[in-house]
Image (tube, rainbow, N blue to C red; front, side, top):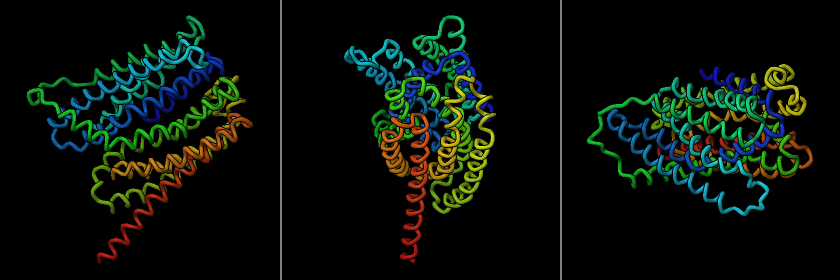
Length: 410
């Protein structure tokens, strides 16, 4: 199903580039990038805490009630956050360039995206990979199809595109919620104490909120710099190239993580077992990444022809290899990400993403003004290299320290 999701992304990109010009597409990607950082900062900590807590719950009845308790907390949190985003928009000065009429739709897209992401993640933690994949498949393909239908039948307009996203996501969310089974097996409606959940979610998830911001800087923040220096059309070219090339690497890392996530957590109490899994996984991930980068290098013309309209091909194709190398490195780093999650060492990722984000910002402001999308692609590649390097240094330094400590005890 993961492979089908990759093809769904390609079809979605192809459809949108066929009917939407680069300038409008660039505006659309900037708005969705803003939504992305908000979703990551607000909902990722609770979502990841929910995945961990539900997976660790060993009794089905307690798991059911824990899931309901976290979901209630999540709903309150996201509704309040959506309202605050709406208020911030209302009180922004009217003379700001980016305070366009369509920005008012961001809180609604934010709310729906948070909930869709939560439903998908919870299904993964409950080993319902097929259900999670179906939700992701609809998100990758149904949304672009709905956008294209609106563009063809009404007009090519950024406000209508964002409005169509809201209707499409509403359908996906209703579909995702239809998976839930109604059960009467609850302990007299027992819900876990909200204060305890907030405390646990905060201590587990606060590094993830910062990770979401730093990760966004590394992966998407360059779009804001690009649009400022070179306009929305350049963002359109870069976003298409990024979507086509990065998607297979990110999706492949996600597929592997879905299957290895439970394995890592089951062995989280044994550091030696985690080391054994990472040692076996690392060369496999490196080989897959190398093959992926080589494929992009050899077949860039064919990839461009297949996945995007000719209007986009010249501006996007030159960025392919740089993005491929960067996300090949990202794919390799997923081995260490899984180890960090399972060992509750998300602070490792926080440090690594901080290093990568600082490098990305410095290189973006140095390279993007002169080299536009190419500068953004190179800056992304270098920052992802330093993310991998940082994760490796932190992981192996800790292993070395543990071994030395054990030797002193003996």
